[in-house]
Amino acid sequence: MNTPLATARPSAAQNTQRYDAVIIGAGIGGLYQLYRLREAGLKVLAIDAGSGVGGTWYWNRYPGARVDSPSHVYQYWFSEELNNAWNWSERFPAQPETERYLNFVADRFALRKDIQFSTRVLACDFDETQERWQITTDKGITLNAKYLISCAGTLSTPLKNLFVGEKSFKGEVYHTARWPKEPVDFTGKRVGVVGTGATGIQVVQTIAPQVNALTVFQRTAPYTIPMRNQRYTDADRAALKARFHEIKALARNSFVGFDFDFTYGAFYDATPEARRAILEMLWNDGSLALWAGSYGELFVDEGVNNEVSAFVREKMAARIKDPALIKKLVPTDYGFGTRRVPLDTGYLETFLRPNVEIVDIKAAPIERIVENGVQTADGKIHEQDALILATGFDASTGALTQIDIRGRDQQLLRDEWAHDLRTTLGLMVHKFPNLFLTAAPLSPGAALCNAPTCLQHQVEWITDCIDFLEKNQRAVIEPTLAQQDRWVAHHDEMAATSLVAKTRSWYTGANVDGKPKRLLAYAGGVNVYREHCDAVAAQGYAEFRIN
Image (cartoon, rainbow, N blue to C red; front, side):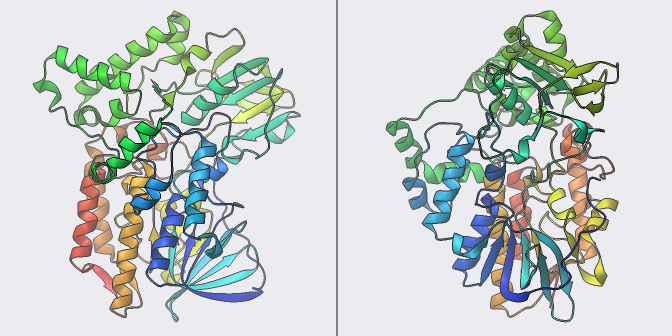
């Protein structure tokens, strides 16, 4: 795994600060967790490595960065007044607008005063004598807290140093997940983009008209749906705001946390003509509804998946027309929806431009970076003035495995997860008392969920659990090994039915060398997951060890 074996710590803390709870991260989840725990009367501090709030939307400011969840579900649900006070400008907002929204939330609820910015957590040790967490930061400060909550995010730890010779390159190098705040001008330059996932797609389609020459290094061709964005009018916004409670309920009770679900009946109950009509309608909607709002069998039935995949391939091929490009850009080696499905704005058509070239690095992998470009295994050197690395993340686990987190008996979470990815409900881990997780392995939020939907649900569960402990004057909660084993077994049972688990992707950890291979996200659906979590709370957390 691309994580350090040990994390350096300051030799001595300058001082110690005491809190009821410490939160790692000030993105969508961290801001809401801070708000909820403060409302519950706790003394709370959130810590973030960035100089401002936003999490993903603070760091990911690369050219073309844009949400591919509709803005009316990519938001908070805890305050209708907040919803009414903010006006989204379009259906799929660009990064600056999403970042402004999160800053608006932080200002409206005065959250900044309880956030320590530009600070990294180095180590978290559970003191079994005190039954409290000791958190060490790179500022030489030790924080003492009863509860430790990770809101560090699913896609927050970029994969770096993947290629031999990166430091030898004489040109500019950028990683999409650590893009500079200052504008970057690629005018007249030869630019290489490594990676064609959702991020790579947005970068490629955005910078192609600016550059002299664009070389796209692709290992796996993505299925992609043309985004149908729209600017909102006052009437559009008023109509959506009037449906606040309806949309909230739909999102929280759907399969992947959107306001659409599998509402068209069983696939084979419809005639081929009727099925085609549904697929056409959802394709024309220009959203992720074709993926997560068409037919549930898409995820579990190879026959259904083959038919839908053929439909999408046909649509993609019609956009390109060039047989050579179709062979390169239209995937045939895996099924639609079993890997991350991006939305695009003219991505496929970008390759019809004379200044754009695609390089198949599955056929001839990148061998090394040299001082003037990229050398592939066929011996060719692709000369570049700048490189953009859209090479992905150590999803769901990376943010925590880069920190020394030690629970009971000095158990190191990094070691635990290097052996096997195991959690209880994706919310807690055996041997790590009072450590709560969001977007962690074995929950929908790890990959298969509209992020704000799942993050808010998990924050609410965590807050209710802490409130239960405080009201009952309990010090510690920890999942038992037997309880965790049952959840892992249930997770694996759901995964075994899913075609997603059978496809190599970051969804299964296949993009990180040495990472245990298990479907990161719970595949039973957001609605079913919520029922499991609610049942645990309703039983008074009976299966947990509570002191």
